[in-house]
Length: 372
Image (cartoon, rainbow, N blue to C red; front, side, top):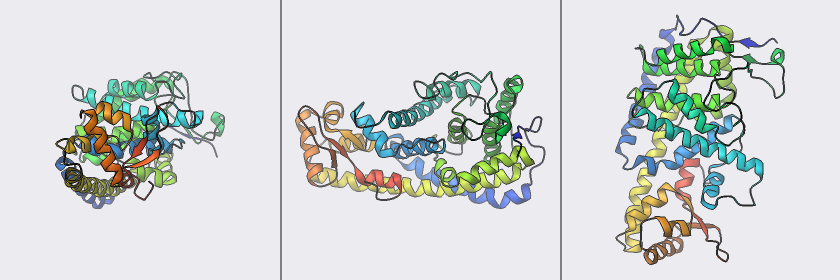
């Protein structure tokens, strides 16, 4: 089959079948509102939900072919460079870490700027820093053609050919203007923005991940959520073939409505899943506040707990050095938490090398099953 080519001159779409979308818009918007209610009720959400943020980075990167797990990422961050991880897996892990850094950079910029090309390009620069593809013009739009298809295929064998480079700058300006325009519904507007970004494929690498970053960033800026913490990639990863098919049908068939239906269903499903996980984490936090205070009988119990929620896999020496707790007290708290099976050792201490421990109940919530 010949490749599908970008839909020149057909963005934004002139015709959307709103009649088929309206039954999906209400449930999706209501699910987002319920999730946001939970999100706004969580103290220090950036800390308590940090495992979900890492899991989003893992899954969004996995859609592009990486194999790293949340446990591997957090253990790598705890231990740093170590010989046991193959180079290929370390490269996967670094891509996940860069994803989180790029999201943080975009969030900081959005305190002063709207969601614009400058923010997108800076996020891309951070995303590609020092990883595979780092030589592919980080932070700059491509100046050569690219295409999507089997590895090593020619353009004639491609599945999809994005917009030509001579039209790319103008098309991104149209994309930016649409992002700031008034629209009948913000979630449908976001669906269209995401599909168009993926179709334009403005960079030589990292387009899929950036396009998925746009989802929570736009939702936050549009006032749909109180913080840019919406985790969409689990649905896309679980329904990967349908995700790509619906995107391809936009350019092949002009089927924006079919894509919007898929996107609205993904938002509804993930809002419900995000809310469930966020509430479970909040319940765990409230439970652990009481338990850790009773176990340790320390004025530093909550400080210790907050630190552990933010880093659910860590070296014991890092906790002692940076939790802001006097060293003897920090060591005693760790000992109590290990004795009570709150923390589990995954790498024993050896010589000068500190033990690496994990908080399995928190990580299992992020994973959605008993992974630790």
